[in-house]
Every structure is written in C-alpha cells, then in structure tokens.
Length: 129
Image (cartoon, rainbow, N blue to C red; front, side, top):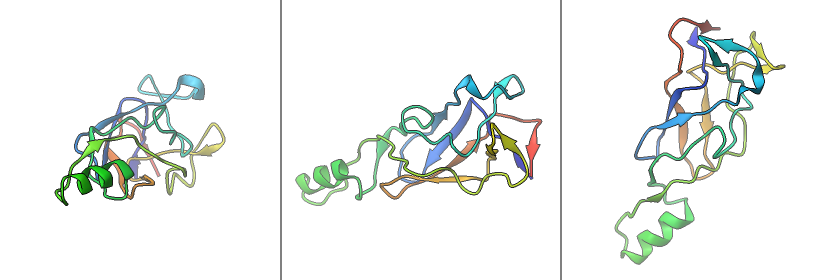
C-alpha cells in the first residue's frame, strides 16, 4: 500500500537538479487531508509538473547544444518538463474522478529520459492499494 498522492506533494526527476512541487487542480472535488487527490491524468507540464531547477539530460536539445558549445563538458540548462503520457501504474482499485488514483509509488516519464517520482506524496494518513 502506498501513500495517496495529492496537492503539496514533492517530486524529483532523475535528471533534475532540484525537487519540485506537485500541483493538483481543485476540480477533482475529492479531498484527502483537505487537499485535492490526484489521479494518473495529473501529468501536464507546467500545470501539474513544475520545473526541477536545471536539467542534466543530453537528450534535452538545450543541454546537448550547451554541452557541445562547452567542448563536451556537461552544461545543465533550465528544466522544462515534457511529459506526454500519464503516470503508471496508478491504483487498480481506487478511482478519482473516474481514473485510477495516484500513489507515491507511481512513476512518470519525461520525454528527455528522466524518471519522475514522489519524494513526498503530500499525505501522511491516507494509504491506497
């Protein structure tokens, strides 16, 4: 059983240099610990997924260009998450607004190769299978 993910969670990307906040819009109308619960569709960049400081992925074109300009020395550039698919796997038994609920064990892929996961789900008391 994982912790139920909600607004105020903290995320980390494997290529990001800083943690980031997780945002859940209040349209869900389902609250846990007085915060909106998340589902697997809360993956939109700059809406739900905020930047992780600087990006170190050479798959990111801005990082690749800056690294090439620095004669091969890795040069991180500002992070702009590019998430194109929902979180996986989601809770198989709990639906939030007709979609699987999100737990702290779910993962999200960035198009630049990073794996985004929870450092803190935003809840302490509520668990989800």
